[in-house]
Image 1 (tube, one colour):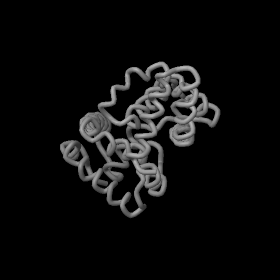
Image 2 (cartoon, rainbow, N blue to C red):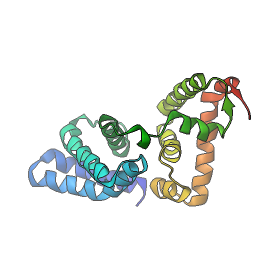
Image 3 (cartoon, rainbow, N blue to C red):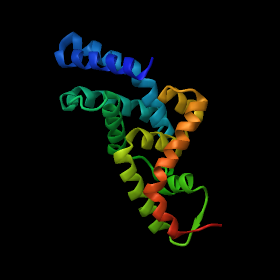
Length: 192
């Protein structure tokens, strides 16, 4: 199923949810079937237990029903529901042992360079990445899935519905587009 087909199904299900009653149940059921495994996998890759991931996914769908009226349709529903997923994960803390660190992202982006002032670099990269994400949300999401969640090429390819070769090129382009946002941070690095 391509992006446009999935978005059409999403919009159909949103209408069902807004109607309420048995239509609401059908709409949520359809969304649940479409997204459940993806969201479970996302939460598992962020270090959550299976039980915790299942609880979080249930919370996501409760929030979808409660907040469906805040979806205006000026962006794809998939982007909106992913924001719900991320915020739900942030709302329920888990142990620091399970949490990926900013250093993980830094290492992923700069490829193992060492720093004499790691906090400054981390803050610089964080600010640059946030600016990048504001302008390139889907690209930032892909880089986050790779760096925070450890997704491999085949998982990303399936998620963005591309071939593995096209996905490698897409990731390369994501990194190239990120570079101007964090290039100034390189002044804070010393290469090992």
